[in-house]
Length: 232
Picture 1 (cartoon, helix red, strand yellow):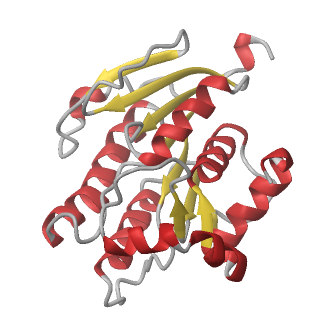
Picture 2 (picture 1 turned 180 degrees about the vertical axis):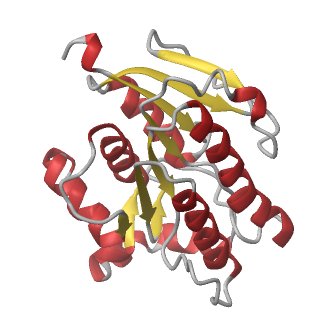
């Protein structure tokens, strides 16, 4: 693949679980010529294809306008866990940060494709009693309103961490412990973090032949099985 045909990819949330895998995969991907990671703290890694941009306040992304210019695609994995932060902070990170970033990106790279890490149960109607579902739905609505030519909404169910980590709460500790049985009994309710990351990068960079822009957990699994059969 020639440098002229390679894509310039923005990555937000590269220090997180899914974002970390997205970064590794993007750097190895021949279709990606440049990865610009917008991070709040240093990644501690270097690569010829990687440009690191420090930005601590996602409530105001105006200063990123130059860094976001000339981009072909973005994989947005910034987020936090329910129960780890207050309700107000959960909404700020989930909704406000996403919409503010999209506002600046739309002005700098209006034709960029946008892969967004949403979540299973995301409710664009705002009627759900679950805050996480309402906020993810609100963020999805904000992205669609920004009128990018391609917006891909990924709604994974339980994301299996793959590598050992300190789990954010008891529910995640329990799900990790029972994962082998859970995966066997409810395969469409789980997705590996690395598989999710691959799907988000692939769709942002290459598009998809599948109709629609919402990818539920079973859709993500099917996509990875089709495009990366060796991982299964």
